[in-house]
Image 1 (cartoon, rainbow, N blue to C red):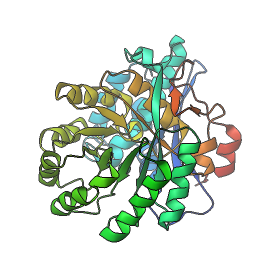
Image 2 (image 1 turned 120 degrees about the vertical axis):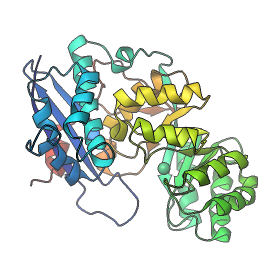
Image 3 (image 1 turned 180 degrees about the horizontal axis):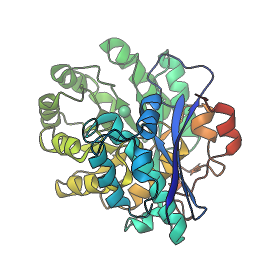
Length: 371
Ligand SMILES: [Mg+2]
């Protein structure tokens, strides 16, 4: 089997709001083969940049677009093709957008491999640790504590047993922050787990102070309180906070996760398959496991990423809960013809060959941005 084409398709909601909501657009990746099998992946990055990295022509052996490196190759050789992409982009890659574009293609290659072999991806990854994964409803803070509490109540009423809120306007004012957490806790009661995503709003000292202040709200984890470059700060808060510290969504390389674990000492590692790729994510999971650290996914995009995350979390022993974006936008909710369903706060790991979700051509057509 040979790859015949690699395309990045940029999908975008008609109106993009200026807030930290990556569910408003998507770069999905389509890999075609001469066997008639099509693989689908997704990149959560700057879509135009990732698309250019796929499309760029070859300049020399260390500078090439990703399509050029892949056409004519066997899509099932996922490890070798990861290495081929890494070496063929060495002058401008090794981190950031190039790795993220590689990750999106890697998901599509695993989708093809599963479809070719008639197996769900988790089985090819050696998995089967779980057939369902507990899910938390992942939300952005709303403009008021009351509107945020409504979101929390809706999650509880839909059967979720855990809920997360993140980003602006949280983090700037301790009194307002407490008003938010008070309203959410009041809406969901004592039994439901509550995670907080701070969105890099604090330094280490502020994090320690706020963690003490928020003690009555019984947070399950505090996510990304610090800038991702502040590894010494992460080391300090991870050592001193009683509440577990989660981070990792800004990382896309094994080396980055190594630093986060060994220097930052975080308690929960968050891996986004659409930025890391399943091939690397399995290595990251082992790194975390050898340090006694659990991994979870990061996901704020479409069901392609949700499906890839489910296969990852089903394939490693040290995984435990799935992030599921509950923003109402049609791209994250309706891209797949066979969307991932959350029932009683759990999602089933897809059993269909490949990743187990197929994009709906009508949704692609509706939101496709043509260059
Ligand atoms: Mg986050």
